[in-house]
Image 1 (cartoon, rainbow, N blue to C red):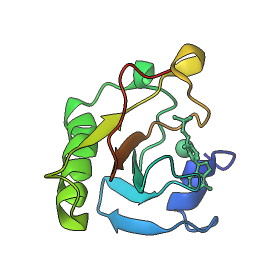
Image 2 (cartoon, rainbow, N blue to C red):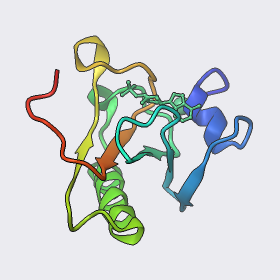
Image 3 (cartoon, protein in one colour):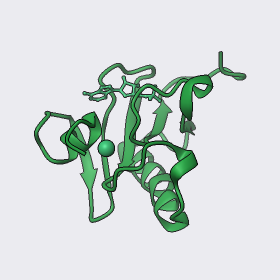
Length: 112
Ligand code: AMP
Ligand code: ZN
């Protein structure tokens, strides 16, 4: 999708601070970090929201990529949060699904 920010990041047309990529997923640091560690894991396939997702294996890969990278970076043992915002009430602003992974500080609950 040429008008999608995250598709353009995957294509290398918009720069990003990439952490990891494989055949299915791409992970990069969030441009507006909300915690000492804050990265996004996205599928290479364009899916606008979680409501359009159908591939359970792909959604699982997003989560397991987040935990793998949290372990590699070194904040997994202390703890972290993974979250996917969906549509307006969920606070979604980029309409290409992305799993946020936040760590490096204590996170409050419930979210705002
Ligand atoms: P959401 O509000 O869940 O849709 O999250 C979108 C996230 O994308 C926000 O946390 C933004 O800071 C982040 N973001 C927007 N543009 C970029 C970019 N060019 N590179 C990295 N992260 C971005
Ligand atoms: Zn996209």
